[in-house]
Structure formats: C-alpha cells, structure tokens
Length: 288
Figure 1 (cartoon, helix red, strand yellow):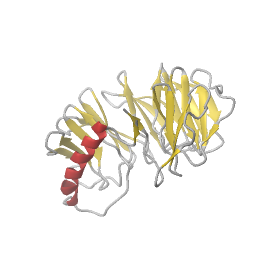
Figure 2 (cartoon, helix red, strand yellow):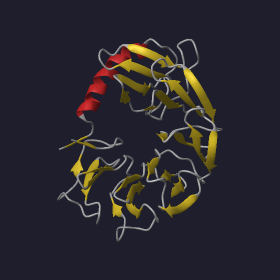
Figure 3 (tube, one colour):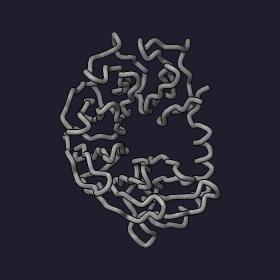
Figure 4 (tube, helix red, strand yellow):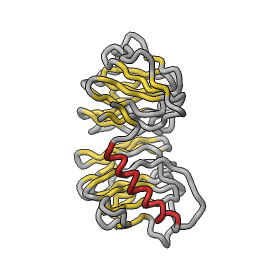
C-alpha cells in the first residue's frame, strides 16, 4: 500500500514531537522552512522552523547539539534537509551558506558562502558536495575542505533537490529548464525546456529521468534528454511532490490532492482513477 510517510518516518515524527518542547524554549520570532529529517547512527537531524538545526537521540529524543548555538543568532530559515555522510552533517541555510558540521558534536569544520538563498538539499558523493543556490549557481565542492571545484549558472533559481546518477548531475530550475551536467567538470550535456517552472527533484531510474513542470510530468532519456513518452502526462494540477518509483510504478501527488500511479514506460495510469486526498499534497509518496 502507499502512504504519505513510512513506518520509519512515523518514528521520526514521534521524536520530532518531543523536540517541539525543546524548540519552544529557544525564543525568537517564528520563521518558515520545510526541512525534512535525516536519521543516521541513532541520531535524527533536522532544521527547525526557528532557524536552527538540531541533532536528537532516536532512543529518547534527547538533544545532542544544535547549530547555531543557543547564544548565537539563528538562520532566517532552513529549507534544505541535512545530509549526513562519513561522520559529517552538511547543512544548507536559507541565509546563503553551506556548513559542514561534525555529526557527533555539531562543531563546524568549514563553511561555504554563496551570494543568495539556498532552498535545495545538497548531494554528497565520492568526496564531492553538489549544491544549488539562488545566485543562481550550482557548485561542486570538496567535501573535506569546502574548496570549490566548479560552478554552473542556470538562468533561474533552483528550489528542487539535485539528483546524481551515473556520473551526471540533474538540476531542475525555475527557468523552466532541467539540466544534465557532467558531475566531474560541470559541463552541460543537455537541457530540456519543460514550459513551466520545475520544483520537483529529477528522479532517475533505469536510464530515465522523471520530473514535473507545473502539471506536466515528463520522462526523458537520462543520457540524451530525449523524450521517452509520446507526450507528457497531465496530472491535472501542479505537481509539487517528488516522483516516487517503486516496483516499476511511478507515484506522484498534486496540490489538488490527487495521487497518481503510472506505468514508467508509457505514462499509462494504472488505477481506474487517482486517489483524492482531503487537501494539497506537497510531500513525496512513500511505498512499503
């Protein structure tokens, strides 16, 4: 069956509910943000709507550390989800900076400053951090030092999370384009015009990249950018949630509250009609 969250996510919600008592005492005006939680090494990492990032024990919800420290000014907000790799928590703040923190202590190892806000969650792989900011630029940084390896400039802001697959980095932009870059050099391999802003993460499966531009869902050859469906699938409303592909089925949801299940090869609907939720759906579908 499909769910909006998994059993593991449900446990995270329990821990986050306990964390609400901690956040209530942190002071400051409330701000916005949609950071999700990451669980690694019996620790849950998340960005709070008060502009701080927290690490909590999954066993009892006890606070391990917070960043910035309580006595320091918070970020304006945190939209990106923390990424934890090899003992380092990479935290992108809306304020325009990426921080590499010790995952155990929260101590800062390095920071990298862009010139504008960050919404997209970075990708970390092979000793490289790939980051999109609303300068608008995409950066590749050395994961150990934060030194810049290359940068690429789309023509619009990037809100969607980045995707990395088979040596290629996929970037969805508000300039209506999806870009495929060489992950090693940042060179553009192809671009595709979706005829509308793209806020969903490009999801790659079996050599095909799936994403939505407004209400239109696309399937492109991951290497060439050529369309794999006869025509885009019209979801009937803006698709904000990232596509989910499980057992050769694409699940996606809309701001109109519909959940669709599609054949990934043809875009043919697999249900007689979409499921209708009570309200808009912004989170990705999780299938177990």
